Image 1 (cartoon, rainbow, N blue to C red):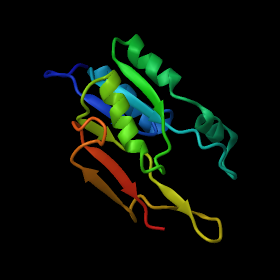
Image 2: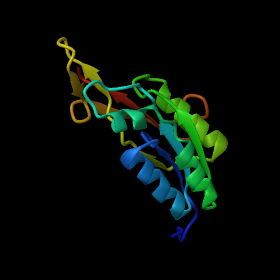
Image 3: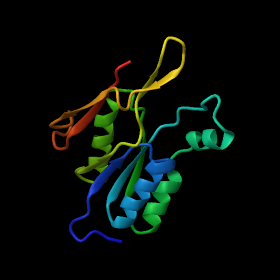
Image 4: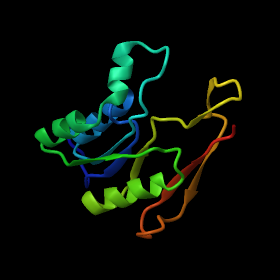
Length: 148
């Protein structure tokens, strides 16, 4: 499937596995250029071994599949808990693929409570959009502010 208009440039987070990888592949098949953002946080205690194996992987297979089908893709590892990470993702996308007009965030920020339990803040925090990225000044920058 290809787009009828001009191809878009997308940033997809969590794109080394699961729904993020599926979304990046679908956008690539559609003809869009994709910045495949991923993070390898290490094993999550209590999770099955296959899940942890996926978490340790990079996004090489996703990028290769997109490029093999004639698309354009570039992978960047980024920890979205770092407030500067979104700007770096947009800068990399613009440098390698062009101005970004699609953002797909499949990863929620999280934190640990005092007892050490994980608390996802996907619905308890907020996204803040700035009109431009600091270094290029052309695409919006998005930053996550978790409430813990």
